Length: 353
Image (cartoon, rainbow, N blue to C red; front, top):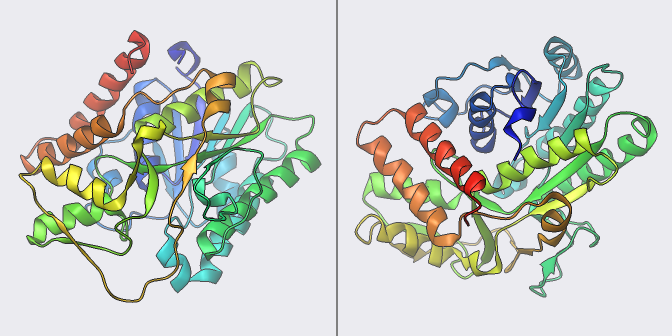
């Protein structure tokens, strides 16, 4: 990653009060970017964004409000936009399907519409999901040219966001700044407090002294530390700006195949960092349908962007547990988060995996 690209560059991040968005803002600040941010207020007082001492110019608003989105974009005058704001939970999408489609589909359209005509815009990265693919249950690793789909409302809404982005790109940005979508695997890392996610469930179980209740213990997912896909997003934005002709317009950022693990294996590995706690037990209650296996191919990101994952499964778990142990010991969340970003950046510069 060329750090000289970012100092002084005006960047807008949507979804900064979410898990990945908070980490991305912290990294962009480290790189010297001028960060503006737009999102709903933090969902809870202990959210990562609430713990970080950020310099970003934060605006709270709703993607479903086109006027609020338009005003935030105009105020930011961005050169680069990272669109991460979303309703990002599968189970919540079953409870609130209309709100999920409104946020993830119309909200994406509102952002793209607001970005039309921006004089200084040079790149726009729309973050979707590894769940945008039509999953037939075969277990093969999905490639960018595979058919989009999605059975649950969350997955379908993210596939729709891909189509909205492609339509805007062809209809309104053909001669303008390049737009790309980024599809990442299941991310873990310090500070995630979202409901119905595995590591946050582990942390809550540790706090309560109870085992984690797993809906699908044998479900396989592409687990990766949050810094790996964020490095991909940053590299994608840079290549879109500096060499738009060779930048992919849709790209997967997933871990190496060895990091495709079951939910039970994740809990066991995380628990090993805490003396075998919290452990897990199967949740026998009826559950909404979820794919038994989800795998990504990141060959395109490697070939076209020079990106590769730096943290394998064991390291991703270790870094995540390290963050939570440090916070439990009273260390400052900003310092711990930035220290991990610095360590990761050194790994990139040193070429180690």
